[in-house]
Length: 153
Image (cartoon, rainbow, N blue to C red; front, side, top):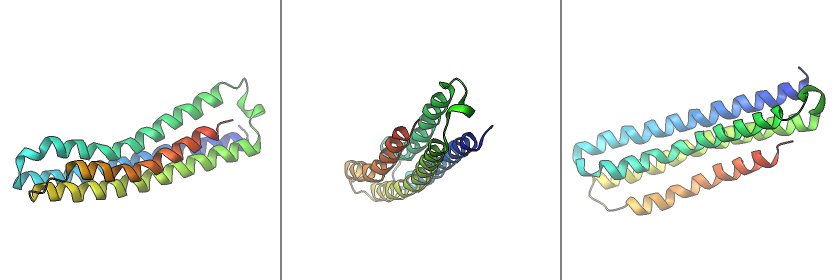
């Protein structure tokens, strides 16, 4: 195994780990807020559940990019001979970028969603506004996914 291939695999591992960790933290934050909100207003469960699932997409982006990168490497006859140092560094950098953006955007998206769920439990009709605002952190996860896709050799 050569250095470029090791760099590519390290980037992929960090990408998958961080993006999935961010999603797990985000979904848990939303779930915890929903449990607390249901004590006040049990009828908001459906809407709260929809908001809770939003931070899970960052993990899905990491998962999808992992398989795109893995299939890109698998498509080479001998990846250790074909992958250049620049390509290995590009895959590593793309993996690191998507991992950190996925981690951070999932947590920040969850924070926004938690505020919306809390306000719904106080009787405010903010579901649709919360859903719209939750798209903004998602945008950066989508952009980093696109960059990871573009960095494929």
